[in-house]
Length: 133
Image (cartoon, rainbow, N blue to C red; front, top):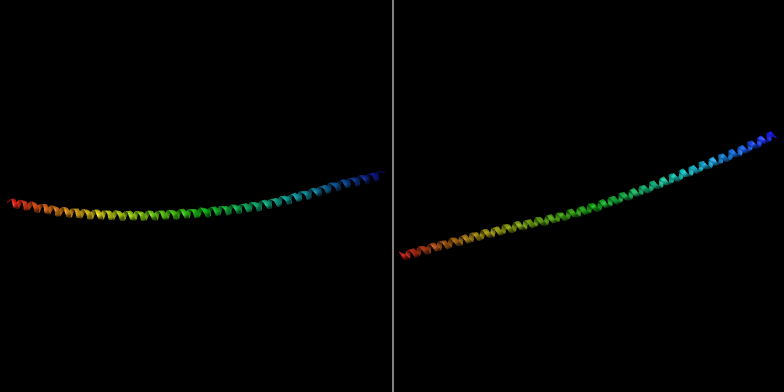
């Protein structure tokens, strides 16, 4: 009786050990699955972060291009404005020179006329003084 009972106990212990081993194997497979899922998520996150980085780089380069073209536009506009101002200054200088030249010619003409009038006045004064004598 004891031998049979001990064999039955041994069988029960073996069954219990078998259940424990099965649960350990099940736990190991669950852990493996969880690790695979974590790896998958990590890969997915890596891909997404790479895509995000690529998008951010593209957006940054696009913004820089826009900024560069706007800077070029501004530079061209300022160059055009500078050229216009330069032309305007040249025109003003030319107009100033012409005005000064006209004034100079007018002064010469007035001086010439004044000299002629002065000579006429002297001659008429001389004629009057001669006539009186």
